[in-house]
Amino acid sequence: VIDKYQLIKPSDVVVDLGAAPGGWMQVAQKTVGSKGFVLGVDVNPIQPFETQNFRTILGDIMDSKIVEQIKECLPRQADVVISDVSPNISGIWELDNARQIELARRSLGIAISILKPRGDFLGKIFQGEMTEAFLREVRQYFAFVKLVKPKASRPKSAELYVLAMNLK
Image (tube, rainbow, N blue to C red; front, top):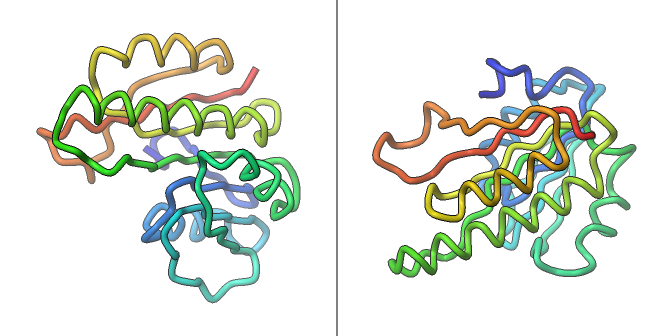
């Protein structure tokens, strides 16, 4: 997804919501290089990286103060926001799907408030009856919106990502 759509470019500022254990951050770090910046946010600790242009925030995206915390850490507005946030799975599909959409909506709200104009967003959702309504919401803010399934995702998984590019 990152390569195919050139989501992350050298020198970009990238924010990774739900970053632990750090997989997306490692990919972002390699791509942005020494002139870019990567910020990871998660309720769980993230293993520190050995570079200057990398920070983490131990925090909950549902916290009302998180947007200010994120903005304080960024060198400038973000080019890309990635959200890999997941709820604690209960095993009750309707509940898990609703929780996932709530987290995706919050991630979208954070992205809109920290992205530069024409910035990009990639957010995890679970495919279900709320998917279309969420996509309509995303389309209000971004010029290009598409559902994608990364190669790393299990084929039978309901996990999808909303790729939203070019913030209006």
